[in-house]
Image (cartoon, rainbow, N blue to C red; front, top):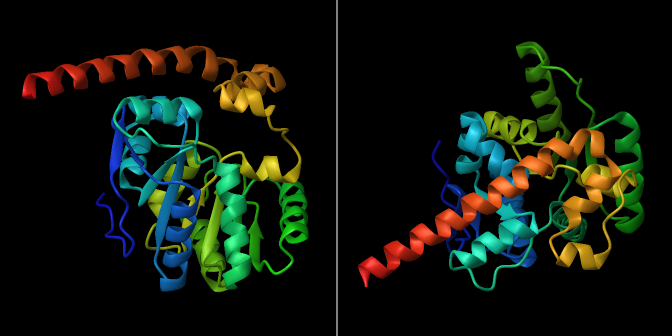
Length: 264
């Protein structure tokens, strides 16, 4: 899958465990998304954390979806650490829920209609209340809670038609990783909008999940806070993926430093 050429060029990508991460901050990401929405471009953006990075090492379809994205943002602090260790010294975190919030604010100012795809009817209702309370001018063209099962070809075509007929130019996709990344990759060119995979952002803004204290966020310990909230579902993800990520990252950094010295 080839990446489309952007009218607003990103500086460069940093490959962290073979996943391309854009050297971009919130302002840059929001500007790209809004520019693409204005121009009628079909595109998709992924928020990458340790979980999706490690899953991509085992799942070829997810790996292809991440590599084919128009750009990926570093959603987790350990991903930012990796980017900095690999040369992006000033890189900062671009957290999916915060990116969604900032994109909604820009969309409200610019009159760009948005769509919501994923989660439950109840969560979508709470999410819309939160968004429109904060941004009264925001136009939510549609909010879709798809079935929690694979869709038939006919059902999928009907969903795509509904999204396109709504007029949404930015579609937030909250299906969870890796489902949302694969869904966006499969629907590029069919969904006539910029798609943003924002994971747990729907639950955060709907009030279903609380954010970790700021000190834990800055220390890269937000995963520990989430683990304490939902240990039964998340323990395997964090206990296995986090150490494996740090080990693989250390190996990559050492390899690249050795290669750099050999080329001097």
